[in-house]
Image (cartoon, rainbow, N blue to C red; front, side):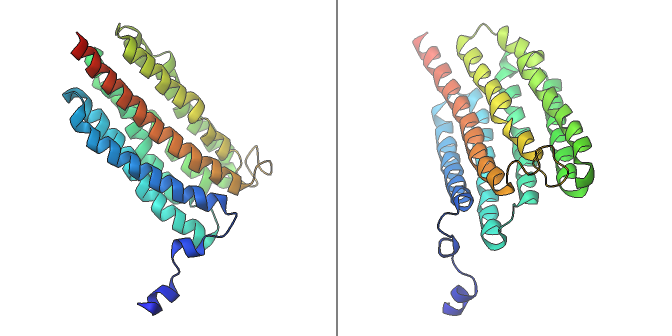
Length: 248
């Protein structure tokens, strides 16, 4: 046992003082795991139609927590950004976040086409971003442009498109407030990711302006805020809907 511990130091023993990126990897993994436990347990305290939404919220933070567990070790051992692991996380969790829009609007007439449209846009955004950041770094601006098309597609749907129209037509003030909050998460919270993409060394438009370690720090904080915050908005909507039914 002693030889095993000597061969592979514990994470906390390897974490250097002042390594704020490493700190946020650790905090992010624990915060998102705690959020998953909360969402899973609270499924029994909401109305039936909201249980699926809370399940998805819990899955989002659980998947992210598992990936952050591995990303924090990658950072400690290598001192470089775990880009591939980040994209594996995002390609699973971001489409699930888009599914949430369909789930909360389903009772107000959302069709399955909205679900697949949102997932399609998210995959364009993520796959193109991954290719530009790893395989085709020399032409990252082109792949960044393609990725932005997917992001703009999601923005359009939640701010002006069919999803927005369904929320406006619901005549449910609780849903409308929650939907608007989620839309702001997509607009403001997700904006950090294209900014990070533009810091790609050599070919990025912001190359040299921000250090890659700084973007890892921002990514870690942004991931936790966006994913946990997304789930908490869904939870508050479910609780508010239950309260309004009980009052009626």
